[in-house]
Length: 325
Image 1: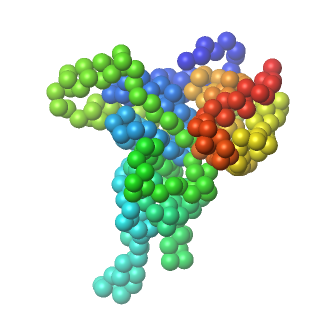
Image 2: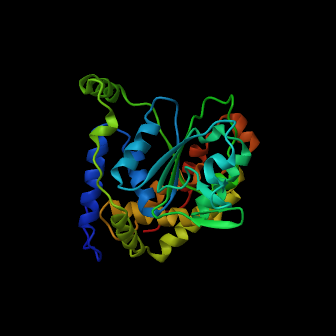
Image 3: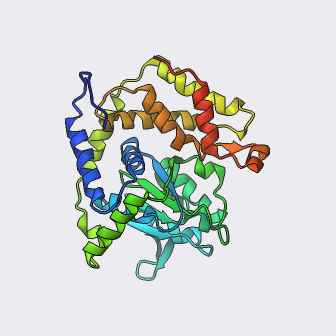
């Protein structure tokens, strides 16, 4: 965590202490993955959804479950499959014989934190059912609108390798995720630590080691702090310049939308907060820009054939832009 050498206008002591406790608590189970933890905590404070991508066995689902347990709110998990219907996710109206009326039976999407496992396994019809709830925190069924409880967050996982029985997520849906987090394999030392911990746990469930730390009220309070985080005008221009570069870059077929620039702004504010600052720095923007942009851009066919990744292109275009000081 960065050392704060400036005097903050907002007292962030309680927040930074809580962030440290959260990292320590998750660290009881998860080895390494500090970038993923930083981004997940940032997404909570920035009120955004997260897509976590990685090969099987790198603790994507476990991390999401641990995060849900640390927050004292309702949690539900949905396993997406090719035969999943929208009503299985949203809920449906059921006829009540006693009252002779239809009653709405809420689906698993009605919770505070919703973990969608293998989100790319469901067809487009089911994916479309998530559009409204992810953007507007509400669901409309049979002409009635049902509001979600706050805080509301979708954590989705997907496997980038296996293509059989999967569907490409619509671009409109990808744009609704604040971050896309890539989870890599652990290092050799981390692998040893993982094996050792599993051996010493003696069959106990990892999730049972983690205790609740955050309430819904605390999250609302911390989000109020985010509104007070200061950002200089030249840094707003810096964000806009990054987004404009994605739209004019010959390596890209599709650039980022204005939602991406807002996501960088809100993400950078929240990330500054968890680092104990009430102002945004250029480094905050550079750190947040990659997980915000990697799933919102589409490479040109030529660059895809060359095997260049979206991450490489984003890093190149950010390096081209002069950092304001």
